[in-house]
Image 1 (cartoon, rainbow, N blue to C red):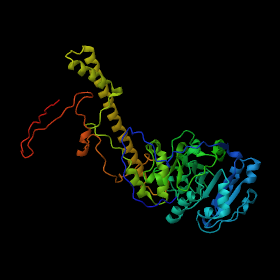
Image 2: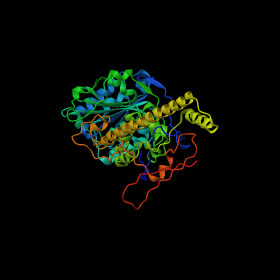
Image 3: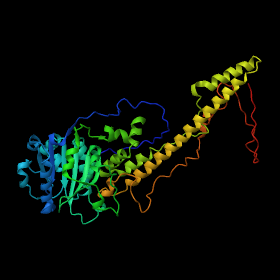
Image 4: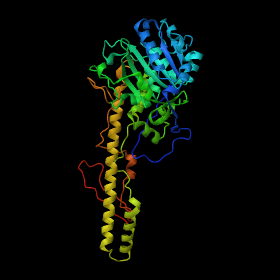
Length: 465
């Protein structure tokens, strides 16, 4: 999806947030999805037949298709479609015509989407395989990433398979053809297939395809990564995956984890409600999906600008209004003042209860303030981590590593960080400072001090009732 250039409106957030409702047209959508086993669903294979696939790559692609089709029911095999592409779309083939595949021209996966028959075949599928061996120019990659959403196929589960010879490490594996798809598809797997022996390794997974990791953590790529240390899978493992019904998403919508759907235009215009924003930040993989979506479309600068705006600024504890739990302290204070005004001495238990109420209010206030500072620190750490990840080349496998798992030889520049232990309060906010205990008589303070005298003077408070 291509996001329009616009001025980003700065926002700040304090925790806990004041309950507010998002604008009427902004909703947090969590659709309930049906699931089916792989053997019963319609499947399409989008096969790269560019000239570079000549020989072992094309043979490996054909062998992969045969292996997957063996997992399908007879009806599903009959319904299978093979969608050949290079720099244009070629006639759709059935499984029986698999051996008709031949290497041909250049590499432009966008041909899959602009061709009417290929586009229709993808939309009729519950799962599609994007099979490729090569890289594409940055302009073609950005256009393909935007067209995936524009043509409405980003709600369909997808398995991306890069075919190649593992002579170099995983960190140098070119992922440019598939990264735009992986960014926006919520249920997706990114695999590498050794074209010499069919060995399959997991490069990254999302959603329902996380089961392919078999309990292992998500792979992280750096210069020390090795193919034999990545999770190994077989085609038979696909039979264990439950495939959700395709989601029909708008061109500007992205489905994140837990079936959360966000409108990217609303997100970057800061029109998303606080609850939905909190849901996004509750899972770093959500931010990684947004990051990859923007990187794939060469809009990472806009993403970093928006990300820095999501910093949480804790309230200044010196001037933050104190909350009186259930108005208990105010009630007790009023009772004590009333007794004094009638010339009666308040009973000792009443004074003890008032002191206890004040202590409880202060305990809660300190706990809330410390909680705000801790949540602000956690948000700051997430922002730093995801922002650093956005500097990674979108063409190489480290881009799909989860944020926070990278090894950096030098820190990336980031925005200045606020000192969470020091708060500067604007003069306009000083009126919020509490001037007397709840329920006390009105109190007026006058500061007697000469503004022209260089020597400091002690301020005197004069109380008037």
